[in-house]
Image 1: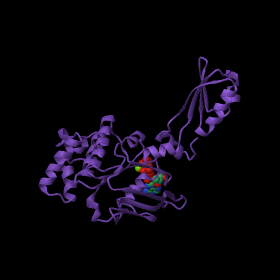
Image 2: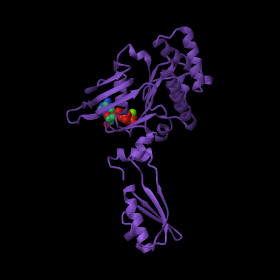
Image 3: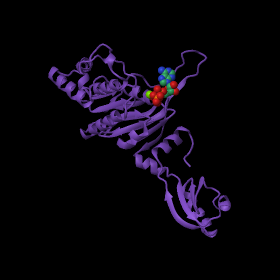
Image 4: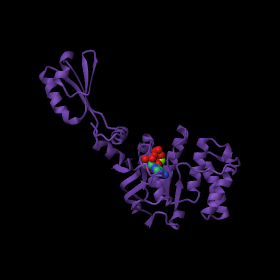
Amino acid sequence: MDVILIDGLTKVYKPNWPWQKPVKGLDGLSLSVSRGEIYGFLGPNGAGKTTTLKILMGLMRPTSGTAELLGQPAGDIHTRRRIGFLPEAPYFYDYLTAEEFLGFYGCLAGLDRSTLARRITELLDLMGLTEARTRQLRTFSKGMLQRIGLAQALIHDPELVILDEPMSGLDPIGRKQVRDLILNLREQGKTVFFSTHIIPDVEMICDRVGIVVKGRLLASGRVDELVSRHAGPVEIVCDGLLPERVAEIVPKAAKVLWRGSQCMIVLPNSDLVDGAVENIRRHGGRLISVTPQKGSLEELFVAQSEDRPLA
Ligand SMILES: Nc1ncnc2c1ncn2[C@@H]1O[C@H](COP(=O)(O)OP(=O)(O)OP(=O)(O)O)[C@@H](O)[C@H]1O
Ligand SMILES: [Mg+2]
């Protein structure tokens, strides 16, 4: 079952002044997220991630297109209780302590007193904030605020968790904690949809990834599928070639490196391997190895963001 279903979402931001042009925040974006999945919504700055998440949460209306969460239209008030949300720039009430802040959100979510007390203790512990329980949020560091924001998103034990850049502002330990937390949510059968531009975080934990650029979804699928669809360059190592003739023997080489008599030739893609190997042999070269370099999500991300096809 699709927990999130987005179909042809477009958002045009109207200009504040007549001489400004309208900005397209989203341009016909469609995607779906199944129950129990961790879906990484990856894109460069200004791609439309926050716009999508705001529309999903009913904080903003799309210009056209539809979005459904848990089978209901985005913004449906009754479904809201089943969803946890971490905004991109959460506003924190400076003078509330950590436990008062979580208590406030727990009350809004309709938790009873004893459940709330238990959840506050559990979540502060999970986020490593137990020591800071009675400290006012104005004394929190950026990373601590990010953690309390995450605790807020989870206070009512939601079945769908939507997070806008949950790793932002966190140190490597904090990022690992958030990754573990997201994996833990999946183990409990929850669905997690989060935006980020930190590629390793996506590679490590996501079941599926969508790459959004300029408001469009340019690729979507499992990380290994996306990466293999865009096979990377191939490395050929050989010896017995004359350095001055390599450019002529393998004219399409992207890079040529020498180590003693051995020559490493990098070809931009696998289609060129047969021809190159044949030429190398014909010119008296001896083949030592042919190794495909696995494409990385980073290469795919950069290529998509720069609007150019992968080599
Ligand atoms: N309130 C607004 N008014 C006008 N344009 C906006 C508004 N909010 C966003 N935009 C524009 O819409 C586009 C998408 O913005 P959005 O905030 O959704 O990107 P993002 O992917 O979340 O980026 P980031 O990684 O920087 O958070 C950008 O071009 C942005 O300038
Ligand atoms: Mg954003």
